[in-house]
Amino acid sequence: MHDDLVDHLTRSTPLSRGEALRVVQDVLAYFDETTEDFVRRRHRELQGQGLVNAEIFERIEAELNYRAVAPPTLSLRQLRRIVYG
Image (cartoon, rainbow, N blue to C red; front, side, top):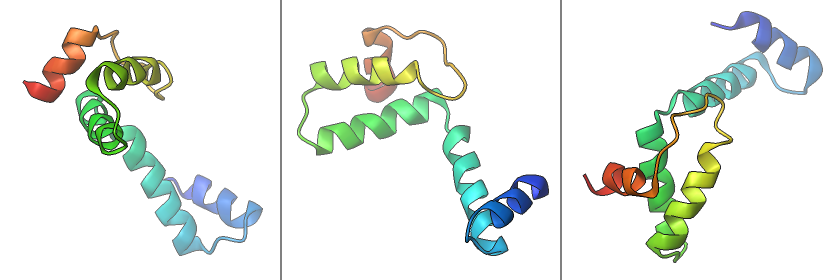
């Protein structure tokens, strides 16, 4: 999968073919994350940093604009519902 990208990485970096393949797979998995999974993951991470929900949901709302595939615009209430159901 994505042999051309793996080949490019092995030519342009000191990565071996196996390392380049793992990097490509990791990046693709990162961008495969659904909006809901991203919101839940970031909520846990930010909560672990000691932030409170008001700060967390505002930060997540801002971060969503920079995802590789732009998700639908979500209100703060929608973000809370993703996390808490």
